[in-house]
Length: 437
Image (cartoon, rainbow, N blue to C red; front, side, top):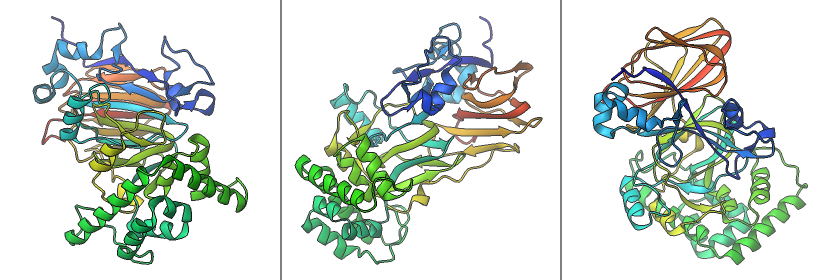
């Protein structure tokens, strides 16, 4: 049997969801897909996700049409490395994506592994697999999203200053919350894992859970009434044109996208995180979030499990969501990752979240520059997102012709990336055997 090539081009798959950016609005998913032979570009179509991996919902293929998973199964030790093959079989433990977000995704969270197993067993038609789904987002263009609960004194300030929000929460719960967490308090940046006063944290988390459950279980009639009052008040106070990034602009935009939806009120309980290109956020399992705008590279454990409760026409599972969350809280900055340079490389940044299934490299080269990635003890997928250059692997030199070309790289393979006449940018997702990263 012939030895498999250490690098092969793979064909990613495109998802068109309603929330995706339209082709005419500069969807990066559309831009990165235009070279695909079976891709039919339509400027009025929303192009939402580009999938790269072996997940059965939308698996990648080789140029000859062979499934990437079948290619890996042909020589898993050579292609994946023995430790990764022993641990995960012949499928990749991560799913690599590009997302182009034209309007808000659902208010959602992803289950941890024990809950995923339970949900998949009970409702396999809704929860398609039994894996957890921690995920990381790296901004390609300016990005915003809901990520985690706000510091609690900020929520108290909204209870005092937004009567429509307080009306949905209800007088009793609002009073209890405000008595425990005054709006003028100096709320520390604490989560369940960082505070020295665990009893206080636990009490605050219980109050936050009560408030969030009241919000998400509020009657449709009450929510509709209060959202319409809120939107009318915002429009009365200076019209519809509000500066981008303000609460008022976000509330109006969400109501345009999802009229009268309960998720609009999540503006007052969830952080709005903003990322500039190259910045990243990591989302643990059981943490609430919703992407709002921008284009990102996303990597996650290989799962498609989503528990939704707002800003969506899809199935909502409010009881599961409100029970599964950790109710950690803190400022938006606490959601940001701190990347570092990758080993001996000068131009490659490592994003290394605290989970075993994946890490991501971002290589940005100016004309004439190069970086040598030392061998990684596990498989990887690389996507070219800008410019022209070469990828050299064990004497084989590849010159991608298009942005959006994607390559699988076998375990233990040194990779040299060189920019030619223009800047050259690539993202590389990988998994490495424990103790090797």
